[in-house]
Amino acid sequence: MATPSRASRLLWLSAQVACLAALVPFAEAAASSAQMHPEAAALNPSWTMDEPGLGTWETCDTCDQCVLDAVPGGVPPPRPAPGADGKTHCAKCLGCSVILRRLKPSTPMLGKDVKVFTGASGAAVLKGVTADRGEVFVKTWCGLKGGYRQTPRNQPVPETCGKDGASLAESEKQKCGERGGVFGWSECNFKFLNALDAMAADANLSSATPRTWTEEIRAFLPAGGYGEGPDAGEPDPSAGAKVENVKAQFYEPAPGVAVEAFFSEGASQRVLDLARRINHEDVVRCAVFDLLFSEQDRHGQNVFVSEEGRVVVLDNEGSFGPINSMLLPGGQKFEVYRIGYNAVCCGNLPGGKAKNCPGEPSATSAPEVWVDYRCHAPSRFVGTGLPPGVEPFLRRVDAMSETEVFEHYGMAHEKHAKALKVRVADLLDGGFERALLLAYSRQRRGNGEDYGNDFYYGVAPPCCATEEGACAIRGAEGAPLGEVWAGNGAGAEARALWREGEVKMPSSPKGSSGNESGDDDAKSSPAEDDDAETAKKRRRRTRRRSTARRLFGVAASAR
Image (cartoon, rainbow, N blue to C red; front, side, top):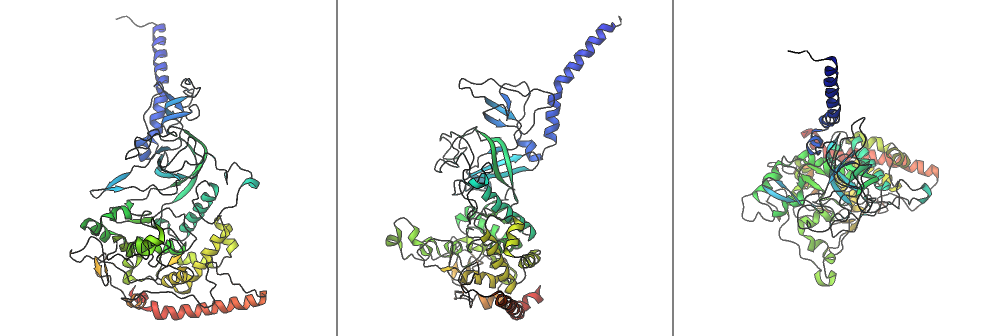
């Protein structure tokens, strides 16, 4: 057989090198996907450098599919030809930092198609996936191009963050307000949520709520319109629009579904079985989170429960206000589930007070009352038995001034530090239940007509079964008795506080000004302030000792 000439061998080697060079981009793409979080690798679109319509985040104006891979090294960025309008539309775009998707209208859990709530604020809430973290949720209140709407019924998200955007000069930025998560704002919302996340971590309460952080987005808005469900056919002018120079708040995914969505069928066997699986420590931890950070908008759409019974709270933008949480009996959110919307705020129904008031209390309660913290606390009482890590946090904050708290956590508003300091003092003064009743004593008494977050209605005895005392749960009529936590009856402390047939109405503490800040109208000299502060601390220590002996001795010995 003839031996190949030297020239032939060189020609063959050159062809092999050229072939290998052509494969490098694909090898780099495969290696890039292999290094991703498994959730990202599963959702990241496949691609080849020679496929039609491939571009990059930089070279495309609109795009159907984001790709998390970067352009392989040594390869010119792909650039499809622009259209007749001069804009470059791409089928796939390399170099995105996150793949964004609209929320689905429902999700399956335990054999049920469970509704997904998108929120009432109109902010953009999207599912996302990033290369390093996998699946996330992404939320922004301004800065999206193309007239993005969360649903066709929401107003469009503003295309610029003209109130407090990072691109504005300091002299042009408006001062942050007291509420977090405000539509049309950006940096103030980020400060609010990141400060709360840092405090939750310091108090060892991060497992009560998904961790959150701020990132700039390099992406394109979802191109599939409004997705599945009744809005699927509605036109979406923002489809495929580029997202650039926009910050957003990222969240870890919350496990499970909204309590209100799953419990909506009433006390079926499926609902009761899930309620029995609820992790009791999770509920107590979430209740402590809501009381400590003064949550005023905790309803059943932002309390999530998983198939395994794990519970978390989310959308904590109502923190540092009055107390209004479905986990804490006595506020409006809880009372709506206990006796019905008609009986709690009839004036907020169509037709107003003249048509609807007074409202008639419901004969049965919704099963959402089963996430009352008392149904999940041992002996239905928390007292000073706070979750591990909380008391050291309370003592650290108690030793700091309001200014130090505000600056240390980078809070959005000075009043947040003031509200936290008041709640910390109350919790240290006598434990969880005392702090709850003190908080309610500074709020308005609900009249059954008006809607608002700062009302209290008194604390009725708990309802931790399908039927207990004067309460019965909707959907359980005629069914055998079912308890959320079998055998967890009220201990001595709980029986002393929540007597059957009695609604606990807090009275304002002596000398209270009736507000959360704890400000007094009277002015005094520095020396008088020092004396008053010393006397106050002495009274607090004495009261704490006597309260602990009287109320918490049995709980302490039992634990």
